[in-house]
Picture 1: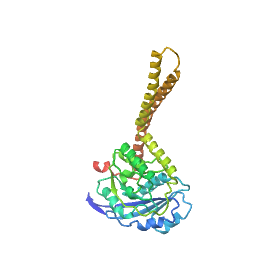
Picture 2: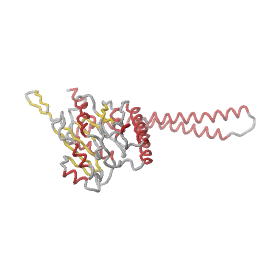
Picture 3: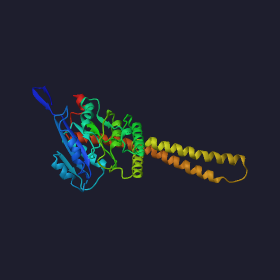
Length: 337
């Protein structure tokens, strides 16, 4: 608790931490997770828990209520992890959380590392802190999953200009200021997209090494290796298209242009040095590829304009959130006073 005086008034500032847990049919694992969560963390006067029930058909809500969870939000139907995450962010902001910690209901992450996770935010060193798991030492992670983890982290690093070794990690601490800027489009997962958004907003992101617990259940995101690979690759490509459309489509356009030039040159060489007719197939292929190159090049500029428009809308959304949540003391505004 911080006190200060000004103009004859005593100002009391209470620091609040809310730990949010997206859940889907977690009546068996939720008690294990909640048992390890702290109710006191250095630097905070209040520590609360928030459970986002993503359309569970079991007794997840009843278990959460019986174990003293402060905030419980239920979806009528399953909306996906990303939607549950964003709903939790919204509820935590309304509940005046200064810092939000997100963790999983399967008790994958070691709750004892929460003080270490929030420390960079408390010290003003970061707006978002990502828990870095010991990926190489986690035995239940398949080789494919470890490879995709590296690919996903590389894509996030490229698009966000950040250096996050474990971008898919869901164990993270988020300042109120950073949370106000988040808006996840994906339904499958929020992990990589939230880092990209934060990085492109020039928010400070750091990683801290964290520990993990033993497996309590099979992953609900990974129904099969092939399904996980497919969904992960689609997510990575989609993120690249959404957040850097000009680069994505322009690279594709250039590749098609080069592909169109090669058969076109072949046709010209054969036409000039050989008298017999033919080789019209090379000309047709060249024309098709060059036309596609121009069309996709146009898409690059349209996508870039959409990206600019999205950035403007995100700024508008941030201002509306500040107004709705009566936030006039975060980020840049504090510096101006």
